[in-house]
Image (cartoon, rainbow, N blue to C red; front, side, top):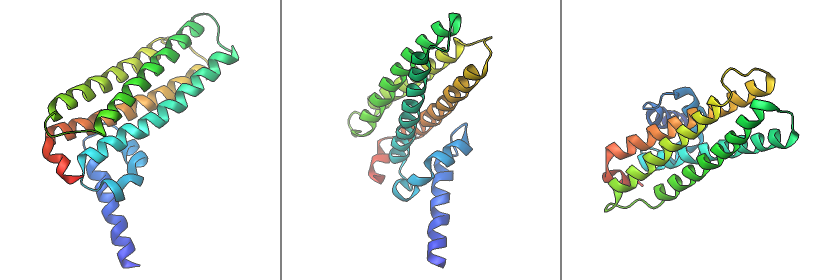
Length: 179
């Protein structure tokens, strides 16, 4: 029983250490705790995990946005903002997928340019998420409130993923030895 407790404490320490560089640490710990036994002290594994969980949540929000669009419960300005938001989330998903693809194939030789690409794509995803939210500025209603909360959650997760990627980038290609 003591060994199980120590293993659990180590896993808690791994995720807390990884998430210490993020802006939304509680969300980071909550969404990434299950990766502790795999990622341990590997910055590249934590970066991949951060992008992976963000992709999963962005997919859920994208489906939610499409359901709202198809239900025709939005009209006028909200309808236009929603159509823009659906497109923004497709761009977000494209950028997240490109990022994960590169993070899965990191190399010593191309490490710096790969990190530049990934940080650019994650930053673009954040911009698309902000653009989605901006379309609803000044709008009210329960659907808008739920939508904005869900989009904000993806934005926070993307921010955390970017922080984990930046930590990997500053560690340098030596981080690949911990994989």
